[in-house]
Every structure is written in C-alpha cells, then in structure tokens.
Length: 293
Image 1 (tube, rainbow, N blue to C red):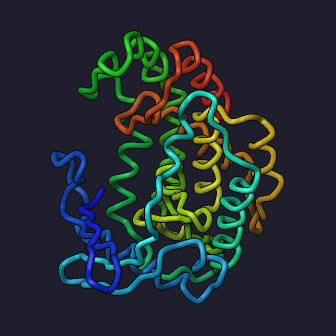
Image 2: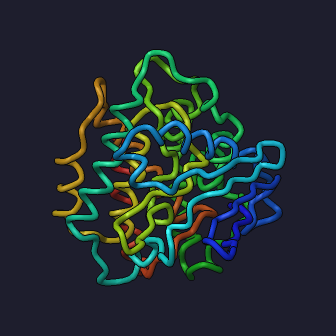
Image 3: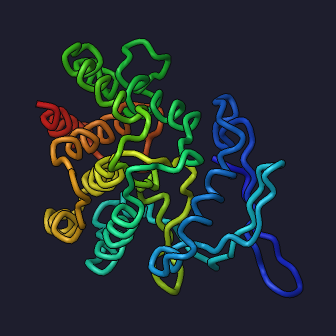
C-alpha cells in the first residue's frame, strides 16, 4: 500500500513509511493519502496496553502534514504469506498468539462511544469496493483466466447470483455503517500479510484499515485466510476456542465475513499467492456461499 524504507544510521535502523494518494503496488488505484496518519493513531492508542504494544512496532514519530511514520525496525523478518504454500502450517503457539492479540484488542476497546478519529471512512469506501462489490460484477474488467485458466467460468455463477449479491450488499452496509454502541477498534486487515515473524516472536503490522466496527469482521477475515491457506481443522478450532468473544458477538455475522473474504480473494482483484487447483477453489467458493444461507 505504501512507500516504505529501512533507514540505516550510525546508531540504529528505522522504518520510514509514507502513504500517498494511490496504492504503491497498483498506482492506478487511488487511495486516501492520510492513511498513514490513521495507522499512527492506532499505534499511539495501543502503546499503553502492554500486550498489544509488545506485539507491534513502536511508533517513534509522525509527520501528519506529509503522511509519514517513523517506526521501530523489528529486524530481518518475513510476513506469513508463506502460509499459502502447500504443506505449510501455523504452529499452535502462533495461532494462540494471533488470537490472543485479537481478543485483547477487541475486548479492551469495545465501547459505547467510539472515537471518531478512527472512522477511517475513505479507507472503508476503498475496501468496500474490493470486498463487497467489484468481485461480484460480471463485467468488471478483470480477466480471471489470466490468473488461472477456467477461473472466469468458475466465478460466473457467483457473479450472476442476485440473491447472493443482495446478501453481500447487505453485509457491505454493515461494514460501512457508522460505529454502533458496542463496536470495537479493529485492525481492519488481519491476514498473513499483516503478521510478521521476527526472531523475538510474532508481530502485527499495517493497521491502516483500522476502524471502530463489528469484532466479527477481524475474526472472520482471519478465519477466511486460514481456510484459504488450507490449515488443519484443528488450527481453526484452536482459534475459535481461544478467542474471547466480546458482548453481543454474532456467529452468523462472523461466518458471513469469512465467506465474503474467501470469495473476494478467489475471484476479485486482491489475489493471494495460493497454489490451489481449480477444483479446490470451486470447493472453497461453495463453502463460502453456504455461509450466507
């Protein structure tokens, strides 16, 4: 999403991150230029909560006028995108750590008076388009066969299913609605690309899509990616059993967020480095659709 540098000085290294008015990977896609400022406010909000601060880089400075963050360098580390490779599994320890982070974030920040600085409306509009709308348009300009032969035909029944599209649209309204009493601060993009694996334990980065909303969204996205990465059922059960559900948590809503995330990652623009066969994608899409019944 952003222009990011590792800066080496005579004393230490730092991460400097600037958000610009477009997505760095896809410059033709416009994006809110101030998203780094929202991310910086997230780091600032959690720094007084030891468990959350321990699992995130420290915010060292922020230039709001130029949308620049200066962050602690966590050292040489990879994200968890390797999880999508065949045969790769998340350890129980990592599954528990990832779930504990969400539990702490969601229960600590659940409130009846959401902080308006985290509305993050423009980023949600951007995300809404790519989650709830674009993947379900039959003529959206994306030739899925350039990703995998036969994928375009596989996507058509979902793009032509008006009942499904209506249900997805209703879910999209939940995502973009103003924060309701009982909302919690969300990471907003809780998937393997936002999880880092440095030497001193798992870390969480890139909360630029954060907002006050339903806890079911973060957990639903996490579960979707465990399924897309073909993780064992036991791993998913570990997450479900160890997650501390905030008051009012809806299993149905969580399932729907899981389903739409699976579908948009398989037939939308935001593709993942998966090695799934067409039959495996077909099965996942069917499971995802069943979550809306």
